[in-house]
Image (tube, rainbow, N blue to C red; front, side):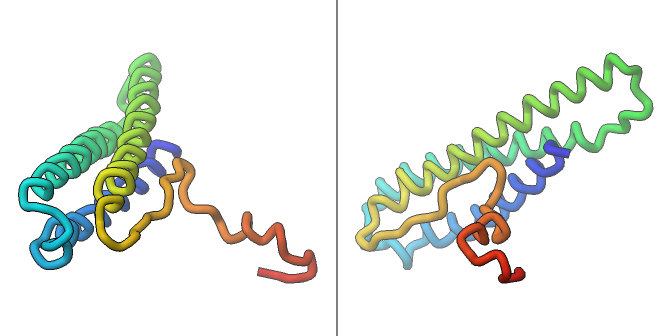
Length: 139
């Protein structure tokens, strides 16, 4: 199930990365923030990270679509290991994309912009935040 979760999470991150890139590297939003050359360098860096995440996400999708019931047990174990390994690789690429945005792109803008840090396990659940509230409060 973690493979499916990682696939969902990485596709969600990718779906948000395309509009981010459109505005980040467009002419209007940051035209006075950096030179054309700086923008091209940062765009190439970002698009490289994005492409690596996209490629590996599609590989994971391909592995997860495999009809395992047709394989011998040793082949199923082999595919399972590939899925586990690729899930870890994708997790690392998600983290790198977040770091690229936070440390290489947003930090150089005139106004302070930040994004939520990447969490491998997803966003903090509201129920986990409820620990500070009185026990008689229901969520």
